[in-house]
Image (cartoon, rainbow, N blue to C red):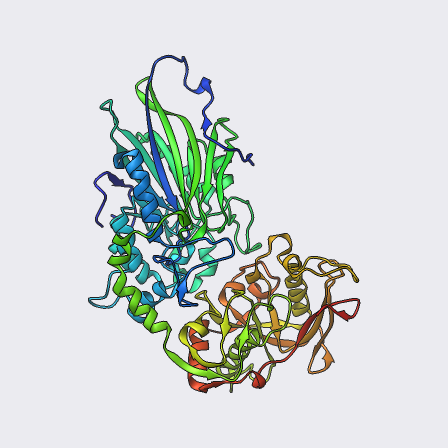
Length: 597
């Protein structure tokens, strides 16, 4: 693997709660001993996370420049401009650039070079993310869980194409329990005093990979908790002479998990690492897709502050850790750490990056604009979070038909097949007239695959009650504001499921846990003991969202093709999409029996 000349890799099998504050955080004076004139040196560690295949400020699903209600911009081309500005201000030799994972999945650009023109092919292309990150000059990147979506061979090829190490101290070979990727990288920064500052970057990834990508990693890799692996490696890095230890963690800071009791490890453990493991100076946080400019956690053992920062996803923000060290007692010691984020919508795209990947961009734009069929009516997801919309019915119809065909003639063929689907994007749409790949793919931006699980009527009732927590309790007669109706307790849209094949009401005037009313199948109340087949995506089936029963339910069938490909293939096979053939109102929101809409 080509290495930055200032980078030294750790050994690996592959290679052989705190308070939020603003401003920089000074280490207590007692940690430095006697004060006086000391040599001081400052440097900056820049960080990105959850880039998800974004190079250009472009939305391939709408085929236009990216925009959202906050007018954010996305992509590595924008990040490159910010990085260049920081390097010019600070001096390139006084900076490092790292990432916290989820790099090679998320856009049609990244999908194209994993599936359509794969980087794993003989004489295959270099992944656009590798090209862009190499050109910008990344020093290290942690592995994200979505790095494993396309299988280990694609990840290994991407790793080979990067001029920087992919780090994962808690991604272990299943047989040897040795790191399957470099755990850390060590970087030397030259100071004016003739004594280098040694900065260690420890990479940690998400334990949820073991269940979310079980098909790709099962029996090959295991992913223990972040806290235990950090406790193992940070002392080693200090003993190896690291003056500063930075953790790049693909793990949020909330201390929560979406997979319930499926794993003994915490999904969002970054703050726990800071609190429990001594010797860490700063943590670049990823995975949660939230913006945290600066968050300070006090380590329980040492009393020292640890500064955390999470830049917003897709290259919308760039984190800057400004670190000051002092020379005393024969070594560099951290005196001050501060963090902030820069907004990529304040700069233009770097023409060096856009020019480098212009051909790849044009190929993908051409690909996603291929016509695959026609639709007799326009469909959209704008109201799908609170209404049973035909566009979500389309997903469920395709999934249910796929599972029925797979089970035909077998032991489970006589059971009714239901299906779950979420509104992944409130801006997805199928137009009347020509339907393109981008239209169909826009319904399903994730690389989820399809499974069939066996559930009882009682279990389905529990499942739907859990899903209905998504709505904010709203008394009968009170005004309903759709902007405030959903995402109760921070539940994202993708963790609200509508289930087709049943009819039911969700009484949002009632407390969560007792909202499902009139649950019926083919006009009759659902028998709690009756068996049903649920067509379900692999994220949900593996415990994602912590929905009850489904993760432990018997698996009747599964395949490895992405659901969005299944939708595309279905549209191609049908030729015409007619909502009259599959759309129905199976569920609705009510209050004391009265429909909300």
